[in-house]
Length: 214
Ligand code: FES
Image (cartoon, rainbow, N blue to C red; front, top):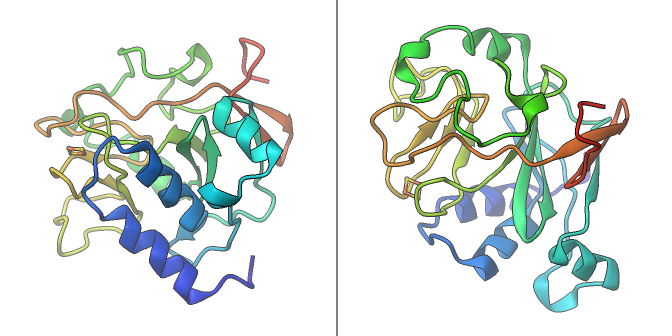
């Protein structure tokens, strides 16, 4: 992970700001461009580009489950895997980030995850199986842009009440560190939590579960 170049990290940030909604090819490039980002710098898990997909990559694009090794994902970092052509984010939330999920619930549209945007085992106050590990589809529920990961507290562009989360640059939708959408923004629902399970403590399978939190 330490070998990731700065150029790779920057391409991930820049590409995430591109206002190109609901474009599957564009989305694939977003996923392939870089896979790990975070406040601490992040590390790389580069995925194959569209024009050089291996048979296993094509299987993933068709919907096969994908595995993600989170053993080196430090608190505060986010990594991306591709599932069904979509970016799936895995975030190792800090204690402070988890604490933020319990405050200012009035700012959220669906704080209790009542809309069907997650499996039953993630319909809880942290929207995940393990509290620290968030797994969400990185596509805005408004028109399909890719939001940016903004874990910092109260940055100037997002305001003094920003406690970390995801910001969609296309039309300004905001999501907290559980992918719960703010009230009064264009996005109608929380970010989607895909089906997933833990194969081991550090290995997540995205796209498949046994119907229960493993
Ligand atoms: S696509 Fe995200 S706010 Fe419109």
